[in-house]
Amino acid sequence: MDLLEYQGKQLFAKHGVPVPEGRPATSVGEAVEAAESLGYPVVIKAQVLIGGRGKAGGIKLAADRSEAEQHAQAILGMDIRGFTVHELYVEKASEIDEEYYAAVVFDRGAKQPMVMFSRMGGMDVEAIADEDPEAMRMVHVDPLLGFSDFHGRRLAFEAGIAEDVIRPVGAMLGKLYETFVAEDAMLVEVNPLLVTKGREVVALDSKVTVDGNALYRHPDTAAFRNPGAEDPQEQMAKERGLTYVKLDGNVGILGNGAGLVMSTLDVVKQAGGEPANFLDAGGGSKADAIVSAVEVILSDPKVTAVLFNIFGGITRCDEVANGLVTAFSQIDVKVPFVVRLDGTNDEEGRKILADADLPNVHVEKTMLGAASRVVELAAA
Image (tube, rainbow, N blue to C red; front, side):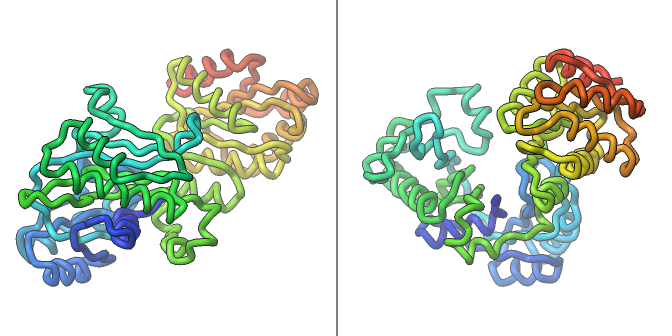
């Protein structure tokens, strides 16, 4: 479960990570009241579960009451990459001297947590890797031994930051690791990790993802969940028991099994397309699950074509074909579908589709052929 910035900062503060003082607000009046109590200047920040808020105009500096009111009014209700702003965070403005980057993630390849730190803050991690790979320093952590102060100071030293903040930055990395472990997090990220003109080290932003399967151990964190702040397609899929991740492209993807779906995303990219989502209908998918999956994919207005890629094992291809026929009878489908069925009862599945003579459904025998066709149709 992803947390909003201010929710992540509440977890940070709980574990001793320094954060600027701030207040959440859901109306212009609450935002102005918060600004008055904090003292100017303040920063008015949109609270949405997606990055790029600053570039979209969702973060603004207010020097007085008039600006606080004006900015809060402008940001509330704003659409940021498909997410509507329903909540604000009003934060005391910080005097920025230096910006760094820090994160704690789980490295599945190494089967250990990994702490990352860079002197190049304010950029996304991919940009840092492209611009100066040596600037990103990393250390794996043995969960039995934990993260020591030495690890933190070594990362800070190797990153080449100013000597006077090596020790406090190292200490903050230790507290971020403590947050990661204690809160059953899957990601803890601070970008930027700020050094103020007074040489204080604070977390100016937060990005925290906690393990949804561990929420029963953290009732306070579970209470953070706000379905209204989630992506509408992801929320819809969750309610229907589907594994769905929204992406930025226009080719809707449905497969059965996470590995097959990930491979399908790669092949669509190879064919020159941009996937709009990751949707795993799961093994043994029945007709009703296929109907739900089609509804979720088509609820994204950016989708201009859909690729069904089914490998029949536990899942029977004739069941999938029947689900698709049912979906077309219940939903007003206006985009082309490309279907690839392979495995258990694939011939029966293809016959069902041929007999149904569904409009704008194209059957392909290979994954690459299906990907090429759907990319062509999506661009038409």
